[in-house]
Image 1 (cartoon, rainbow, N blue to C red):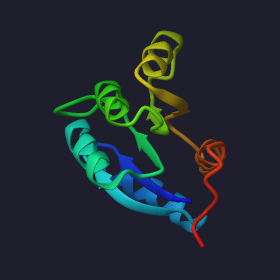
Image 2 (image 1 turned 180 degrees about the horizontal axis):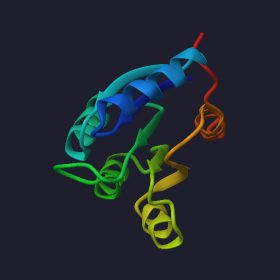
Image 3 (image 1 turned 90 degrees about the vertical axis):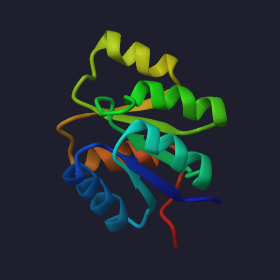
Image 4 (image 1 turned 120 degrees about the horizontal axis):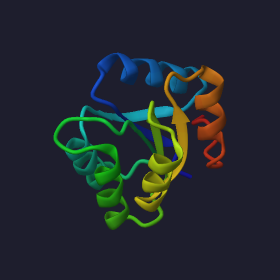
Length: 124
């Protein structure tokens, strides 16, 4: 089974925090992207098991990137990590193919709980 994760956020500090949380629990972060367009290209190339992405980014936002990733792979496991986790936004995100949402600011446990729901056990 593939236990790989891609982290997408325009803030390098958030990417680093998510990477540390995931890797400290045994997950393997194989890619980072700073915007939605880069995320789509890296997804096409690497096909990570899980993609965690922000919504508000330059070039292409997370909802549009999610739509494009789902067009490439309808089984893509997408998690949106955003400060905009409200009903209308959540509905738009889910319609774009996002399966789970993590509110910002987040805790280590929130991240690990959501990632764990995908039956993606840490890499050995």
